[in-house]
Image 1 (tube, rainbow, N blue to C red):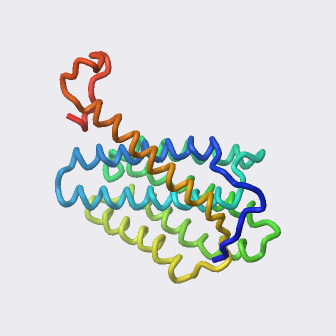
Image 2 (spheres, one colour):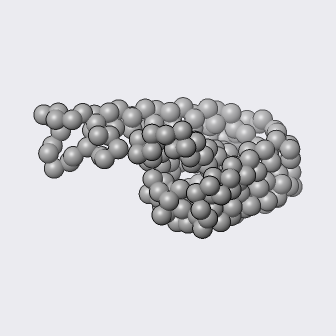
Length: 227
């Protein structure tokens, strides 16, 4: 992995922040998922979903660390990935139920668009393109397994999820980190901002969870999972 200084000052863009908002919404959906299934099985399933969501966000954090998301067709592709991520978030409460296929298909689109955008970033950079090609099998196979999991029964579904996440997380360790490009300042800022957004969302969720609060409009009842 190459750690290099950006050729010009690289800051987190508004589009990246918008993507992070969608991601944080998906995280709050995992909270609702866990509240609805307060069992050891539900905890394991919630960790699986959280692991998939975090890996997808981390992949895009690395991508926008290398590629300017505000450029032409790249912006359109990033918006498309945000729409797919929003569908993933909406399907999260039933990722191991009725919306398993929807979750898997939308997640596959998120991961596939990530590879397409990274291929664009790797044009003219042989080492980066080779790095992208090394992770392509794990990204596509892992995401495809989640689609397959949506068609299976509960017991088998959890096994397929475990295999899919193991492929995603372990493949990178096996294939190595050669060729990736990192702008350290941008990377630190991106992770700092996602924590701030998540904390802000948590504060909002806590406020909405206050039953009978006089400051809460009656026309906006607390979400089901907060009750």
